[in-house]
Length: 147
Image 1 (cartoon, rainbow, N blue to C red):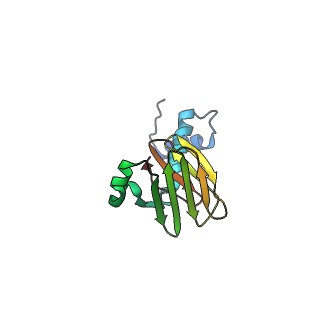
Image 2 (image 1 turned 120 degrees about the vertical axis):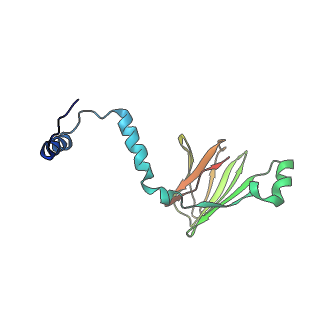
Image 3 (image 1 turned 45 degrees about the vertical axis):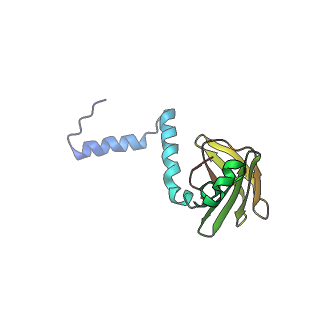
């Protein structure tokens, strides 16, 4: 569609018409793009927690971890919130401090599993997926890491 906007008034009239006329149907790809853009609104809050400890990176545990199948220990800590997690072939156990709400394990494809934290902040999840994941909970989110 070609428009001849030879004056500011003509352009403003065209913009006014475009904004005041609701579209009949929004294409699904536009809706998905808008949702994806909207998720970036609180990226700073989502990246609240950084990994402060990972047993895979601990040199003292390196030889033992290679010789036996041990659980992986992860600690995420920032701004008065701590998430401690143990990941094994049997599943995930963890504790969120301070205790609040639920904890979700998120993959690039969306939520994998959500568990309610008890009054002590402890939670249990099933077998973890392989690949990039992060934990999301009320008020924050960890950075992505590989399982």
